[in-house]
Length: 312
Image (cartoon, rainbow, N blue to C red; front, side):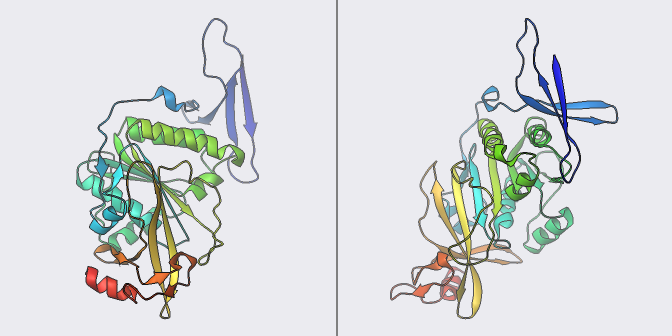
């Protein structure tokens, strides 16, 4: 017995699901599975079970090519882990993720990026402005960039597309930019955490370094709000913040958590130029940087620009 269901959301295409209720004398995958009807037939996307996809892989760290950024993260990001980049819009979350992806392709790995919020053209233009060399494609040494329309794809189909990049194209770095868009792709947002946990577990089991981008509402202050609390799902959490100093709005970066090893506990200023990402020395001369309005203290450099000059 196979049960078919169709749900029409307030906006977007109809979401179709099937469920096997009975298969006499045989084992089957229970639960709901997304499927689509399209030219040439139907496509079924079985529910992802991470425990069924475990492989042996070499546990090693991948680096970004930005020495100060890798130092902040304790030497880089380990394969088989997920990294959450959390911060307000425009703070540099996507740029950090693509820095790691392009560095991976330069070493001969394949990387895949699934973007929900930004157009592909805008992403390529911004990356070029930062000096990131992106070669598009599905082979080793290339980066696949797929723009995802949240209104036109189901969570099951999205997981299937990610699996294809990992199993068929051998992607070793995966970017989901952003979870805000992924949330909009869910017909029932209450199941987002469970489905996201299964997808991240699958990628970890495959030895993939995953980067998740979450845009918080608000720009400054301590009352930043996230659409979903995914911090406990990620192995590493990187927080970006704006702060005001000397009549200028600047960016700060820090690492709150890293399960797989040590990391710096410092807060650094971050800025972008046409030759890439730059980080200052730790902001020792300030207290309350993450609140958005820091207070100068006696020790350490008094101006982040001093650290910037020393770093250069």
